[in-house]
Image (cartoon, rainbow, N blue to C red; front, side, top):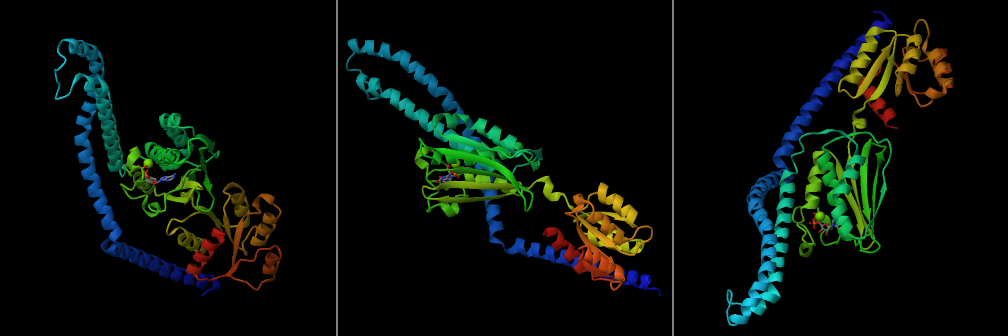
Length: 421
Ligand SMILES: Nc1ncnc2c1ncn2[C@@H]1O[C@H](COP(=O)(O)OP(=O)(O)O)[C@@H](O)[C@H]1O
Ligand SMILES: [Mg+2]
């Protein structure tokens, strides 16, 4: 058997091992997931929340129509009362002892306005609760996701916050990053996330020196986009800080808080596979960070595999693409490789040294003379690690050298590490 054949066969058997390992890992994962489903109380909690969501939606729906009716009618009643009051007061001259529902003229004149105004306020409070409850039950319905820019969501949310903003004296500063990658999201939901956090911030700041900053940017390590909303307000009170994402947790009952805003926000962020965290300190203000995955994250690293041996090339490619982690291109000699380095722009080059036409050493020299390729990561593979050509390669600074045949599993792990750097 030739040396080449031997290398090929060893690699083929390793590939089979690797396939088995991956299958085992997947089976284990399925098993773990099943166990998780069975034991995790959090999931039961989630189910409870879902039931609660359905119940809440039903109740909200039932209250919605009657409360709308009340809200329409109260202003009418107010106007009627204003027109009626002079007539009533005329009547006082002729029938001074007359009572209305047990109340005298003067009491009505002094208090009826206020009675109606209180009713109006109460009705508004109910309507607000119903609308929060409706949002709450709608939270998991993030059906349609499209590529979108978080910056547009920020601008829309601010428009929606205008009425609250006008009532306050808060200064809002925007620092939105240019050229952010799209996220896959539901525009209305992202607006809702930003709006809920911003409204809380407006409530938290002192009327006069209230400052809120909304910033967007990219977290380099994982390609997630962030939206940071910071305020210089009172800070989240320690008594509730560890449960603000739970429904009905509020310390603003007297101002109409329902405690549903952040709970909705949390679910919406999760429905986008995002993360939310906050930092807060008494009178130091509060900062909420929302991270949302972008399409960038799914852009797999690009690898160019160069080897004149078709079989070995195919094995390496299969090992690298097995779990769809990398985008892989191939070349069978130095010339092809040099062309693809320019056009395909890989993140990593896997390079054989002994090849016809142009060998790997020549490719290494080309890479060193091309400043644009200075970031390129390179792994050298060779069946003759002791050949003097390899010394040349090392002298050029290429020190990741694997002698064939090698352990494919380690190979894939090494690549993961090299690309993660
Ligand atoms: N930026 C903030 N500064 C201080 N406290 C906050 C802030 N954001 C949220 N909170 C606290 O978290 C609680 C829950 O918020 P939320 O779920 O939106 O309900 P609500 O606004 O109806 O009270 C608020 O009552 C408030 O005490
Ligand atoms: Mg709120």
